[in-house]
Amino acid sequence: MNTEPTDPNSSGSPTNANGQPIDIVDSQIHLFRTIGVEGALAAMDALRIRSALIDEFWTFKEGEYRYFPGYLLPNKALRHKPALSEHASNRYPDRLSYLIRVDPRDPEIDKVIHEVSEAPHARGIRLIIHKPERIQDLVAGLYRACFAAAERYRVPIFIITHGNSRLLEPHIQEFPGATVILDHVGVARTPAEYEDVLRLAKYANVALKWCHAEKAFGATSYPFPETTEPLRQAINAFGAERIMWASDFTIREEEFSWSDRLFHILRSSHLSEDEKRWILGGSARKLLNWPQPEVAWTPYRSMGPDFTDTNVRKT
Image (cartoon, rainbow, N blue to C red; front, side):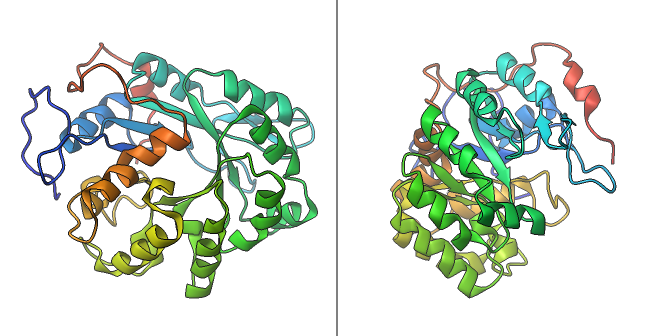
């Protein structure tokens, strides 16, 4: 791992290359998929990550487009219920928050998104739009209600849509008050698809999640030099204040470590310290209305056994 030695008893904030404090936020981890709360917080301390956003996703059920935790409604829409994330965020409110996946077919979608806005540690919703039927739903306008409610209740929308970012433009135009965050560098698979992602930067309500860039741009080893130019293109288009870093380290763990995914930004010689500050935490704090904790950063101290750690999927 590309971590640097740290004093586990230090109470100082994480620092950048110049020794200045920096607030690091990981904008996506699938807690409870392969790691529990206690393990994740200990690793976050080692990497000096202050906070992390949980997308509680465990697995797919064979033969069905669904994920856990949650349940199917009578019309086959999924109602996501990330109870473990709520518990973890209540237990460690300065370290963890979560998002909720929503299904546009949910007949109570407005109510669901309103409840997200009222939940103290929920930071947004996530739309998964990559199956052919979901792309068809997007084109047909089925997602309009999601955008409308997100705009009405000021709930940020994370969206993953494989190579189809251009299809989001009508919704982005219609709902300029909705904060839209394109997951995983827009899941661009070709230069043309990445250009589609960059073109959406002209809309002030659109931001980019810098995650899995190494996969998208063909990098094979740290420090991922293949991602340098695409990141500069993204900064030129969006500005660093609309780009948020995420590791998503619980996916494809065998490829790159959590530390590799962090340090290629934190120790990059191609980014200014101000750009690092925005990408690694400032953008997430601002766009997700997630204030930096007022208390001084201190290493994780266990609050005792946590039942969530017994629910981690064994691999």
